[in-house]
Length: 116
Length: 117
Image (tube, rainbow over all chains, first blue to last red; front, side):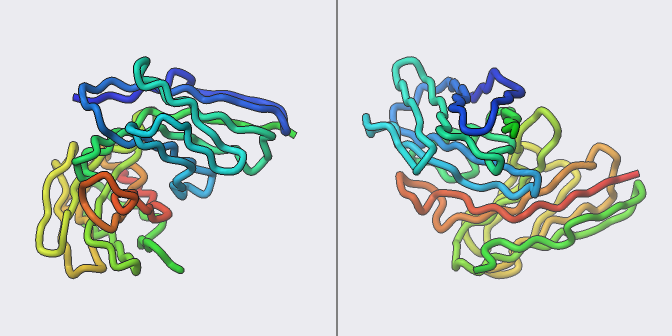
């Protein structure tokens, strides 16, 4: 069974700093998707970024980028120039490429606080 | 651009009462899902519907039933609520179910906070 582990329950940084959230996963699959979801205080789950395992290039979305290390089964999220609106729970998630979203596995989440 | 709409947003029940959480999506998605979110445990899948007319159990189905009313709507029913069902419930949808495609990505509703006393 696949597992996703986020080892940092909480993190806190000052506005404009760069922060990296860690995620590791365990799978025997070779092809899969990885995701980072953001959940602000409004509770809405918002997709931040996704990475296809067959792509060597790390995904980037504006201030958000990932460091995907397939051999190490690591998928960290870097937030550059952090903003107050980045304060949220962040969930890492994994799904095998040929499975439906019912196989999506979430980590326990990291609560990120951006301080003014 | 409503996306996925859940009702109600908040509900308080007494043990043994029943209720239905409603979910509707306007994106013409084929697949819909119900999750629960508990502190420190991430999201866990309760039931899902890969396509209209089908439903299947997820990781934590006990105490729940679902109905895929049509392509747009997927409801979650608690027949006899228990305090252990106090949680935040999320409905989600995806264009397809399976495959290496962006269409497999979930879109979530805003969540429903349920408290069972």
